[in-house]
Image (cartoon, rainbow, N blue to C red; front, side):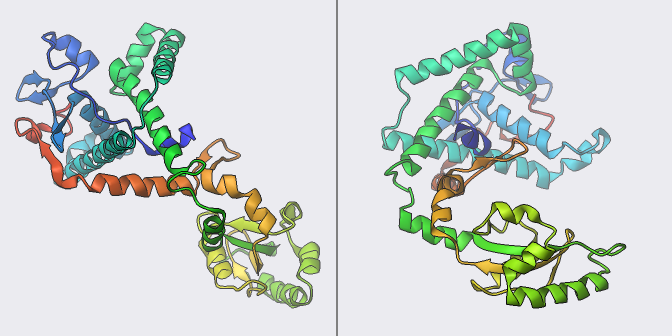
Length: 354
């Protein structure tokens, strides 16, 4: 679950840690600065949310990482043209939205009296210490600079992940405020997931989805047999032998399959069989099934909490989607309470934040 939270959240705001430093070189290396004319300035704060100040190190970290992501595929000689007013505004808006959501989550945690214990704070300190030991101080500092982080901010990021995880568990854990009951889960499952089986017919030699007359003729023959016995036709003709591992059918969402397959399957009622469906993979004949009760229960943890896929990536579950909706709504409550530091607001642009 922590991996899930790391994917969808950034850390919350921090005070300006370097505002009092008089060593500009130290400031430049560790916490950055804003170019005001030719002067390197570390602002006391960047903006306020409901009267609470957001420090420059926190804002800089978000701002520069958003800039890097947006310009990942932009050639260096095109950067000046890329940073037009629209794209500059988009960076500012994304950073502001992130800060609003994080601020709102921390306020929510405070309202619900969700805090880190002393032991959990010590776990964070131990984690940071292990990272430094593993990398070595010099390499750690280089990594921090590359990521636009300071050690203090990095430590705060880790602590905030723990806090946000507590909120997540409070909302969706056992007896959580927003945990789905068994009945709610089953209703959601039937709305979001389709259960079906299919017969996959490979294209005849020389054919593809754009020219497949012979394959479609074969598909009509297969369809006629499938109307008599889908199981027998599937065993006889299907190029997808994976169905043997799914005796109650495949379970999938709209994001799991190509649009042609989803559209055909979702238009069927349980028990109905589709006409041949052409996709890049081949021609499909689909039969929609009623979800199996035992299989729905077996999939519950994966559906709600997510899973790690075969390629090592993490696929979030329904609760992560609900959590994202939750913290966006929280953040919107404070959108009218943002006030920028007027002394530096005009300098919050790519190239001026270093």
